[in-house]
Length: 253
Image (cartoon, rainbow, N blue to C red):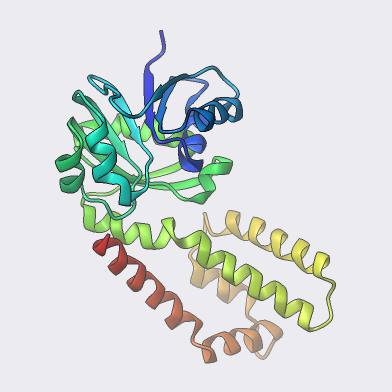
């Protein structure tokens, strides 16, 4: 019999992780709304055990906690029993706060990102090192994992990899708008941007960004002109500040 993973919460992130696990694990889910639980099962495409959240017993279970950070205290009060391990995907929610609200032998923090929906998440993990292998096995089902040695590092990683899709989406949209401004059709600009990001995603896996930049930027060329405009606009400083602001916000949550 396959191991059971219990999801507390049935939103998009829970569904993305469950999709990655469904072929190797038995899935069960607890949530507030019976209709949404039914939708979760339908979209997952495999039978799952569905339970109401209020009074649900997590005793001895492997739990994937996928609720909103603001609902931590409320959800914790609704559960009973002591879980074996809780894997949390709650941004900015410390192990100490989770321990104060959820009863578990151990708690692991993780931070997937939006690419989990296509099996390409960059997920960071921290907590009890004795659960590292299991945590990486579970969360590698939705992409790549990176174990970090402290919660501070995970909060910084949240600012980079967790929030990063929004930053890249802004850049992708802006570059597309720039091409349209110069006269390219919108559909063609979108196709070019998507091809650009798809290819760059593979390149950056194997090469330092500075070397990629140098490989494209010839003296006095088009790339140098455009790159200079980005520097003049403070794009580099803006990106660095974005990480700082997101990290500070993660600490406040």
